[in-house]
Length: 494
Ligand code: NAD
Image (cartoon, rainbow, N blue to C red; front, top):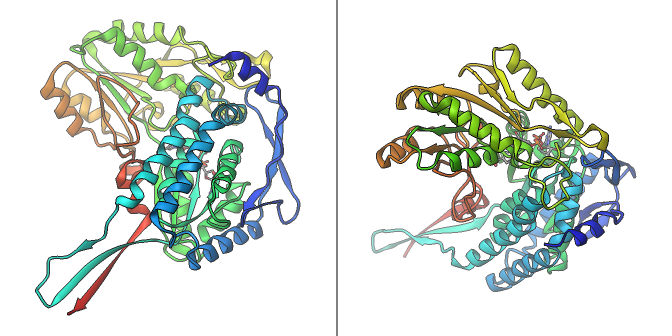
């Protein structure tokens, strides 16, 4: 990849973004817009429509009409596949533009955004496009005079609420299987990173998705997100974001039409390192990348390092070295390894979490401070806190920033006990050469994803979903399709 191309794109002005309703770009019903600030330099980037409840209702009505007249659901599978494949091609063809736009909006380092955003979104869309004509109903084993059939039907209107980290990747995890199964979708991007996802939604229409099948409304969660959550005309809500918002969505469902709600929430994932790890230097580097990439703004980040006491000091020293070697700064530079914090508010919260960890007895062995204030952007040094007790706030609450909590353990049982002592259960890792130990720890940690001798990198063929307060249901893989279908039994007397 060529830095000059990125520099050319970053200098271009960003157009204002409207909603996408019924195949048209539509301003907010009251004409209101909101400013988008770039975390790279704190400067205004563009404006997006500040959606109203009326806008969201209009988008839902459009999606409902598109579903009821079956303009998408009843197309031959090969036709739906063709549109989705074209959509993936358009995303790929525009990948650099989309990645740079996304980075200017949310601050993810460009090297990661290029892989994890348009590239991964296109791969996800192709995966479900390929799958859609391979999903069959079933015939039940019955007596000879009965035919028992199980149909797999689209659920109807899906509301998809997306966070600011990895908007295209996470957006595709929801949109692709929902659309592949014939549903209509109302998309609500995060007000903190709408631009690349809105552009990606526009490309779906350019690829031939009929108007109304995918509508997108920008604006505040508390306004347009709430209207979507409370709608009587939305059948399923799929969400990635904070636990606090996840709870609200469940309340909205209870207060309205009992719509199904699938939540992908936060984590406090344990990265467990035993003294018999195959390569401790490699483990230290991957441990640092596993928490500090995207400045820790990764749901599956390994934010708790549990390290066997006998190697604690030496291993922490290696992780500190690896962290200090990571380049923090301008996310649009190809050699940057830790980009910007998404907002000033999030940066302030990160610093507060570190201060509290120190007040509770933790020792900051590296980082702990804001960086590059002269840029006007939001940057933070990768931070490692040792001596974090399992019940300390830093061991219990998600920071969603570049902060690693370190806790020693003596035995396998103690490692498991500490690993499971949070309300979360999203990801984790174990580093060991012992085959049996690896399997025992994988089985023992209450989580959705466990890595062995690595951290991160799981592709679209495997599910990602949390247990406990990390959520329910799964994105990715064929398992995700279950969220977007209803099973209907047809019991026939022959
Ligand atoms: P957030 O909950 O603040 O916002 C997520 C989305 O919800 C945004 O679109 C927002 O506008 C919307 N929203 C906010 N209030 C709402 C309301 N009252 N009603 C309806 N919608 C509302 O989360 P965030 O700060 O954007 O994202 C960070 C969180 O997401 C972290 O906790 C992180 O761990 C989690 N996350 C989880 C995964 C996963 O796969 N489990 C992936 C990425 C991020």
